[in-house]
Image (cartoon, rainbow, N blue to C red):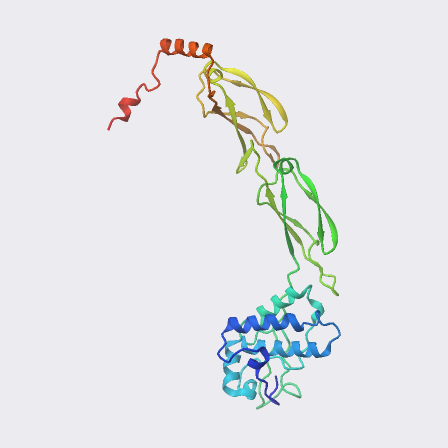
Amino acid sequence: MSGSGYKDYFQVLGVDRSADADSVKRAFRKLARQYHPDVNPGNASAEARFKEISEAYEVLSDPDKRRRYEQFGQYWNQSGASGGAAGPGMDVDFGRYGNFDDFIGDLLGRFGGPAGGGGFQSSGFPGGGFSGGGFPRGNAAARTPVNLDAEASVSITFAEAFRGTERTLSVNNERVQVRIPSGVKNGSRLRLKDKGNLQPGTGRRGDLFLNLNVKDHPVWRLEDDQLKADLPVSLDELALGATVTVMTPDGEAQVAIPACTAPGRSLRLKSKGWPAKGGRGDLLLTLALVMPTSWSPEEQQLLEQLRRQRSESPRHGWLRSAAL
């Protein structure tokens, strides 16, 4: 403000003179939302009040300006600082903001910065700049562009991530068709150019960023770029070997299990894994021994024969190696 009069900025924001920076910011937020011109269209009184509280916040949120204001009162802006606050006649271009939150975020960041860095043009003293022994007039910094980018989270199934899918989203009352490519992973981020927030009056538009959440699957799991699953097998299939039918993402397939295979071994199916650039990865099936919850009399009899005929103890060498 100019030196022609004095305003109690603390009273304007409704805070004590001892109020800290957070208290000043909270008071400004509350009043700004109440008197913003978008909330009070055509209300000249509300717009004047809004400019007054903005002026007060610019001064009280800046440590250097606040110190000079508290020291020099109505002459604070003539105390030799290089940048003055915007006065009661400051010109605010409300149309450059996409929405009220953009404006508040821009204003808080601008006023809360270093002294002389405000984005609103300083009105200076009546009559414009001074020469010779006059007080210097502050230079307004260039405005920081408003971030018009938008973000959205989209949940898709494991199968949709594998094959790709489409989603229709609503952005600023516009229906946007999104193609999600095959092979995306949990946490992938897609960018849709010029599909973000629209700035009224300028035609400028940001980008839309989609954060993908891929739901877990009861069988398949993706570890880095490797598609894996546990394959349930029986004791005889591991001991004697077998050709078993398995399920892959492409459908059923036949897999040979070699005789005397230990549980935990993985079988690799070439080019049956996760989609990637240049083709498909491999699929790893880890053999998981499934023991029955009960045995039939015939099975128990065969197991007794196996025990009598067993040529080697499963703990062969273990007792000696485990001794301390």
